[in-house]
Length: 544
Image 1: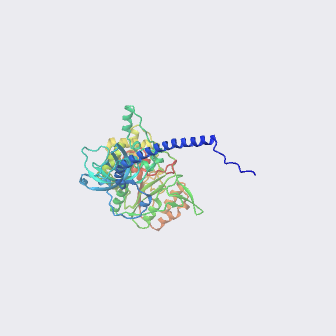
Image 2: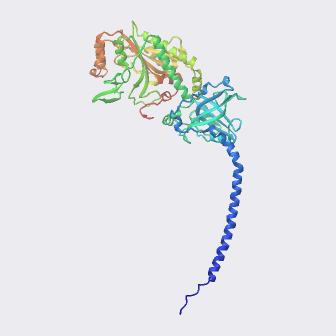
Image 3: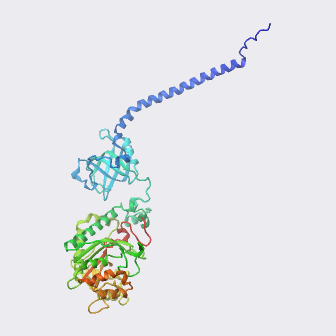
């Protein structure tokens, strides 16, 4: 009878394996114990540090990036913002809320930093000092200094007076910061540095003498990044000056019983003659952009308005890449009935521009000083009663000074500048009127002189040796107007409605036109008209 085999006993190998496993487990346990001990100590240290971290984080609500949804017109809080330009000694001790661009960020230590905020032309220094009493943590100081330049920032704080005058800011107060919030971050590296763009030529010269090399922001680069370039103090001032010139133009003419009008800019034919016109198709028919509001100013006079003015865009298909020409600019135009003589128009110009110059000198000192710091210039010299010279008198002065002019020709740029210098030396003025130009160099609608049809009842006005205004008595009889248009190469059929308007009874009249950008450029003695055009349009530039 067979029996089942006895159970196999544990082999030597199995016993050794169990022993080895037991040994490994003991080693692992010791290792794990050491790890646990380290983790415990780390946890203990963290627990010991946690109260400090929590204490610092008590002020986390006082700083940070504001979520987009919070500034999507979500609610009206009733808070009141103070303009940086209004912060003065009288505000000392007062709590304020301001918003501006982060112009300068300067950490002093982990617990202290300075932030300069800019709003338009005004800057103020904000001081952050880590303090439980102020509700400012070291993390808040670090947050403020981590902001990128030009980021939009809100600051709440208390206005204080510094111990010493501040040289780097316009406002002579400081803000002791209690809260700081970033509304919108600028990219970390801007395409141009505002500090570089705001430097004067004198600063570059001084740096070169000291062996330093400063970054020079060239004109095309400025215009490519115009949204940044416009933030410089000089540019902020330039366009405020421009606004004042436009407003004073309107104000003065209102006081002289002029009426503001708005003429079309899409027209069927050339308004000035010549080839410098932008042509386009208008619903299947040829058209062009208005070179001036000239025809419509005159038609408004025929319509019985007596005196009109317009502020609006003017388009010239200029091929000139010069310092003073643009393809689009803002025209300041005026037209008026005259009773006896076109000098009535000159008298309006005299009063208008003397009023503008006085207004700028008396009311825009801050802006003019700001421009002067980057682009130094001498104040414009002008007379209370504007000087008038005939074209022939001007030509005689040039000839006596050794400059020959083509007979009955227009003045070129160099001749204008030289005449400007001669007039300044002789008469002590940089603003004058030159009248009675040759008819051949004037537009077709210009009235010929009664005593010599080779000359015209026209004038130009100059500032610092450059022409800014062109004006004249206009032809108000349809027969002569049609004749002159044809002589100047204009298809009379394209301006038939304009010519026809003079057949219904038209009073004698005259007027003038001036480029706003050119007035500002020359008053401030700037070297390029692109500096006074917000987003210039010249033969090479259509963007931005």
